[in-house]
Amino acid sequence: MATQSISALASYRDAITQLVKAGEFFGDIEEAIDGATDLTRDEKAALWLLAFSHRDQAAQQRDAHAHLAALQAG
Image (cartoon, rainbow, N blue to C red; front, side):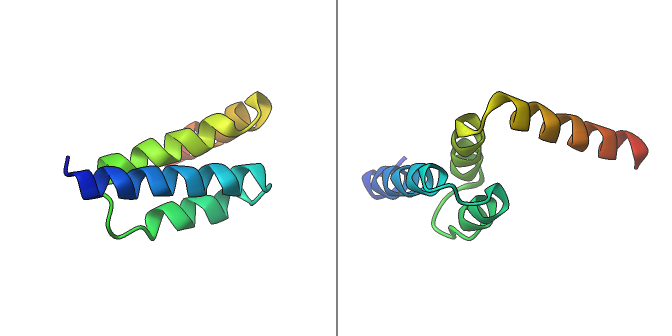
């Protein structure tokens, strides 16, 4: 990974952390991550996991179960 990419990732990490702490909707945070055109898919996934990990446990479990149910229904 190039130094420039590491700096970009660190910058996005800090921005995502601030969005979470500011109470932004998770969907808006996901859109911000998806819109980061200068990051790889793996870097975006890592940022998504970071944002997801900041959510309270009940919200994490609720969303995980909803995604699983949607996959099973489809």
